[in-house]
Image (cartoon, rainbow, N blue to C red; front, side, top):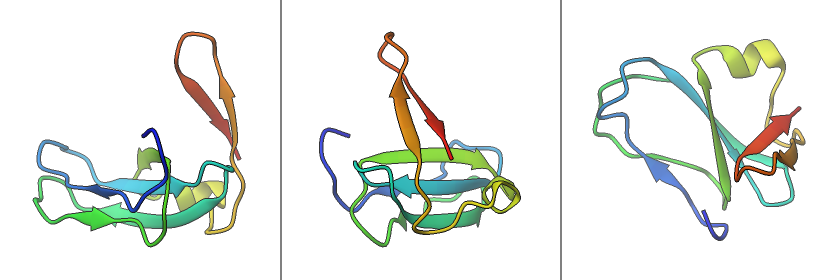
Length: 86
């Protein structure tokens, strides 16, 4: 995303349950949607403005100890991709 805004996603063509971690441009986790069911058209929204969204397998955010307010260090890999570290 080029800027921070409320983000919204559906799971229409996603076959696995996911955790969605919404991250602000400063690396702060602004909201987490946990165990989002697959193959649904219901929009799932962040609770605050976010620039990045990290999709994890369902239950992974809890296993990693990720909570709202956690910090993510984002590092560009030189190929146009970001790597994130909690």
